Length: 170
Image (cartoon, rainbow, N blue to C red; front, top):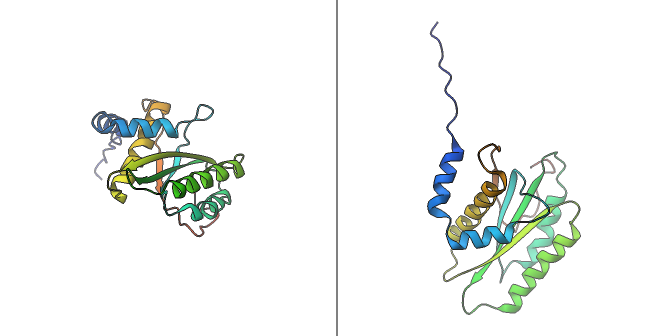
């Protein structure tokens, strides 16, 4: 029988550092800073949710309730990116969404690690919005964990209009 060669896994930390070196734009750094908390590092499992700030305030309470019902042992952070157009946006609707986020943070302050950032886009496109959110969370995780000795970060790409999920999903 032939001997099987065991190959170590690729060093993803170096790949992430290399990626961030070229993709950590000022928008990524600003968003990562908004997501950072001084009292707690980002969990190794991160739920990433873009929120159309002019349209989706009503979905925030239900979605956060669904995450609060999780019964697994895995700690997780929720990163919301409240986004809207750079110009011509409805400030009252954006304020309503930010208010809903603050209420969710207060309501679930002992059960959920809810973080948020706010970003504007000349032309909001979901791909660019998700990329900014992912790059910012990866940057934050790399800064907090050092990526030299830390484990991997798992990102879950979700939408804010989540109606329900299994209690052991995460």
